[in-house]
Image (cartoon, rainbow, N blue to C red; front, side, top):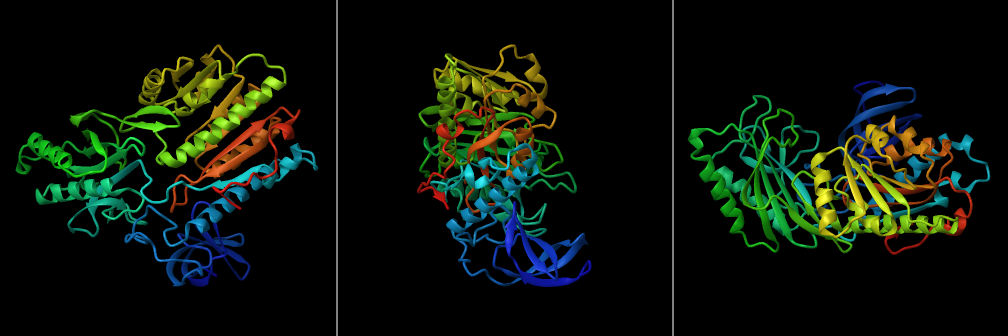
Length: 502
């Protein structure tokens, strides 16, 4: 086997996030965007130390359990990985991926656990994966890009095509959003196409249209639309003010199931293909929408983080709240006579802080994004919660400024996990319980040995499928350094549920 060679084989498994693996003559070959059971041809790109990476050339035979994809953009759009797999099969793949990664982390730290400690094995405390209550039309946020499907083609508004930085796949029939999203996307695309207003070309750093962000409360029906453009308006397009007003009117006139709370225009002249807020104007209504989760109301602005699947978010937060409540009760049984001080680190808009505030004397949230902190404060006031304090700053440095020490810690870091310099500082507090919420299982698995080396063990955890059809996985794990009565409080036997795939 050498670089450039075409090889053929059957995909045996898929490693997180989307790397199919096949064995050929003792060499493990990784091929992205493949499914277990598929027979594929792939071109070798790199080979060393008994492994190789290859690019998919062709699927020569489908997997036995593949089905007709529910989305016409399957295979072209880069947004969804598992569109041709039944949902229960997707969940099984994700659960196996998480369990293998966590077991690798446990094995790495095995020297710090007794040989007979049940926590050495992931199946003793990991409960499985909770399915999404909805697998179609579940997203409460989508970020669409303006562009074309082929160079010089008509204007498109959708997702980037798989493997492409420039070409756009039309999102007019996207299945992970509801009909309101599709109507808004089609209306926006047609509106600007009729006026020949160009999209932004990164190569030449010219053009006007960049992105369309659509957010909708699953439980409130409130919709927020944000048109992201450059400032490169030309007189030949007409009056910018009038065109934007007409655009807002076109959206307001739509027959939607939900109701539009606000229509915005955000300026972004950065070359990078990411949405950067360089100033936002309100074209209609307000600059936020509201969403209800587990009896609380949250105000969500266009750029503040909020779990993108409200239905699964409720599963996640209920599970987290149950674990925290159980931990607090266990602390009370061990002699603690006061409600705990809880740190919520990387707290975002304070959603989890408010969810657990009822069992705490005080919740202190730390978040680096100022807008998110302001939203957290506002939402706490709105929900009449008075024992939450939110601080703006980096976790690594802000911890040194907080005079009140924690009794319990919640971690909900970005995809890359807890900063390696912050983690020892967090573990040094030596609190009896730490709840770790992870949106990337490789980050959780990487950090797991540090917990065990510091005297913690995982006592309960699960994954929650927030992103049906995609390779993304949300996981949650409760750690404790309190060895007394662990198994009485947190039964390590797997709890069966109609939402969990065995």
